[in-house]
Length: 412
Image (tube, rainbow, N blue to C red; front, side):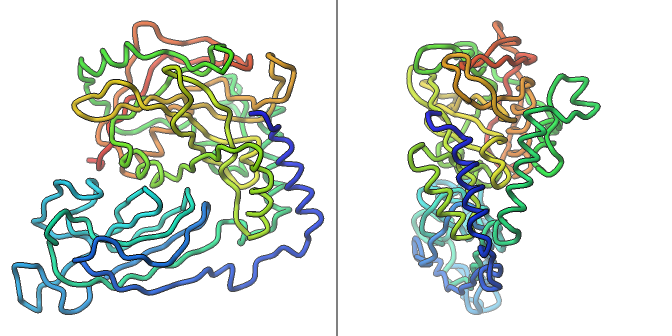
């Protein structure tokens, strides 16, 4: 990226030192709560709640007395925010949610709610509530819905404390505190203060599905590596996701991935302003890389507050030209930033990645599995695998060469 990540860290550090009174009030720590009545016959209900990245949104719902299935006038039968048992899911806004269930929408990302849902917001936008149905309502009635918004972790701890944790994370990755496992793998170990740090080393648990030969052909045709604007080859393509754009976005949101900012020039100012408003900045911009001759469609990341400057799980993802069984094919390259190093192209400071890139590949899959968004999962070794290479800035990495292939859908 053109703006050094150190600038952001130093700016936030200076801001914290010169603003010692920035502590959350009891009201800010508790957040706010609002009650709504959602009609099952209305497309969307505007809650008037503006959601900000990093906020925790907790939603609970219950049927109001007198709500009944459309073909049943019995007062004992009630609509249920968890859905209607015999309803069809064809054409509904959220295919992974039950027909007739309570759903939500922030921006263009729709998601299932049911009777209860906790959401870590990854984008800014108005919260809308609705019912998962298409055409004629499956059930006539209303739901009583409570929406609670809570600030991000910054309101629950001091800025200086989070900066100290970020510094520990950076030092652990930059200069290498090591664990036994890290010493054996050649991978620097990150500070235990970052609960995301250990996740990349875990194995993915879903049973591996047999990969369709047609999908193998599509993967074999894919470029193996991305490149920068100067056509230097870089990170390896290490995962493929099958699913619609809306399914992809809702799955990643459920798995607590944040959409990276795209404007480097505004990143520092935005981070400082979010800090001032007791919000964590978790959307550090990432550099533009290319696949299929074009920039990434999306960049996603996970990190602890402030540590995002130096240490983050992140990936770039592109929509492929081909489809599989009528579904969109998404191609991604994921790496784990663990500190800073010299950019061998120009001598400037750039992010240093964990050279054991398979850990990030598995972490992406594991996060979607935990969110219940994986229908099938396979590992595939292409005919020309990438196993030893350097990224566009000159940092080396190694892999077993396999690509993880994920079909989105409700877990079995």
